[in-house]
Structure formats: C-alpha cells, structure tokens
Amino acid sequence: MLEVKSPPVPEAGLTIAEAARRTGVSAHTLRYYERAGLVVADVDRTSGGRRRYHERDLHWILVCTKLRATGMPIRTIRRYAELVAEGHGNEKERLALLESHRTGVLEQIAVLQDNLELIDHKIDVYRGRLEAGDADSLWTPAR
Image 1 (tube, rainbow, N blue to C red):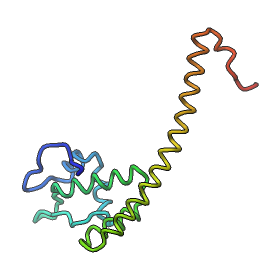
Image 2: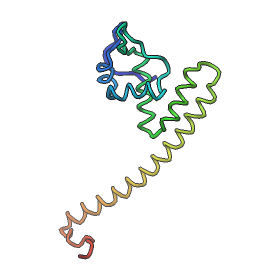
Image 3: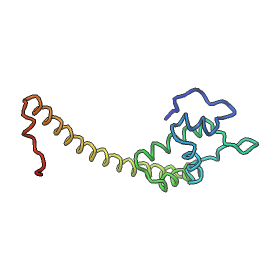
Image 4: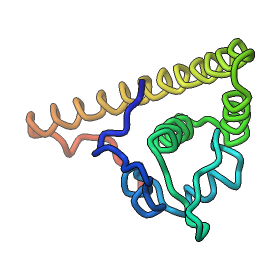
C-alpha cells in the first residue's frame, strides 16, 4: 500500500496548507480535486467550515497525483473515484480501468526508452569525438 511518508496525522486532522505541504500539491489543487469529484469521501470540515484532512485523504491524494503523473485523464480518475466510493461490487470494473491505464503507461515507457537510446547514442558520439579531438567534424547545419 502507498504511504504518505511523514509524521502521523493528528486526530483533529490537518489544515489545507499542512495537507498541501505533506502531499506536494498546492491548496488550489486540493480544492480542485474536491470540485472535480476526484475524492472518494467528503473532506471533514471544522465548525467554521475549514477543511481538515486525515490519513485516508492524504493517501487518496497521493493516488490521484500518481495517476495524473502517469497521464490518466481527470475524467478517468473521477470514474475510478466514483467506483471506489460506491464500495464493494465493482472491483472488476476498477481492475479493468487500472489495467487499461497500465497498458498505456507501459507504451509510454517503451517510447521513452526508445528516445533515451537515441539520446545515449548521441552522447556517446559527442564524447568519442571530443576525446578523439575531431569534434569539429560533427554535422552542423549549412548557413
């Protein structure tokens, strides 16, 4: 299970600023996640209406940020959050959603790996030419 690596959350919860610091996302992003329907449970509020974040909230924010970082569209995260919030009975649909996203991430990784290989090749060429003292023979566009 993913864990937020920080001190335990106090029983009273964290302010939005504290939650932002712990999760690495801005307070604006936290509010957006709520408005966009990406949270699985309502964030607690103080009697004055201020948000109070608990361990489960921080964990879910971490899940959302990792899904976004891997390119999952907001609408898909929203659908996943809806399924999780509905509870038991839709685990197969959740699994299918995650497996589909995983396939896309693996495709992205393959493309990045291919691009990295080209970059590594170019680095090797430049290092070799610099070491050989003939870097001036590297291709340059005509002027």
